[in-house]
Length: 190
Image (tube, rainbow, N blue to C red; front, side, top):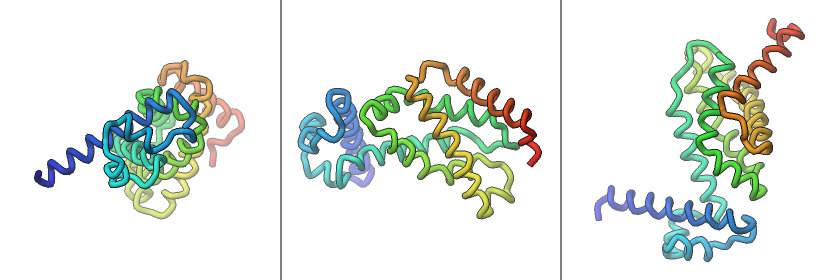
């Protein structure tokens, strides 16, 4: 089997393990799920699991890594900071993964969502910022933390509420509220 064959096999095994873990998470609490149950459900050898992961949490870390790369590659750099556009893109993307996010929340893993999205935020923000001066400066790190923190909390509350609104409705609601508050209090001047 060539290098591409090994890579394809690894990816297929990873997908089977992910699927098995997600199915088990629908049936029982995450902390009650064992690696033995995952490999049995995925129909892979235990050593296959340990070639790919050190522990079951790593399955979720890797999955979030893929989602973060997809997000970063889906949306182009912006010419200007447009809160409404950023919110719309952000909520549309995560709505596509609604079942997964709701499952994570149901499994008591909301903190992991926060951690994983935070971990990828700097790279994603750098890709979205069109301004070369800012994108390559150190200040982008603080800006990424600042904007990501707000968006993650908004996502968190949307998840808790069951993600009932469409992404467009939620983005509209959020941007309207933020702009209303910043204009009313003169915060848009700094």
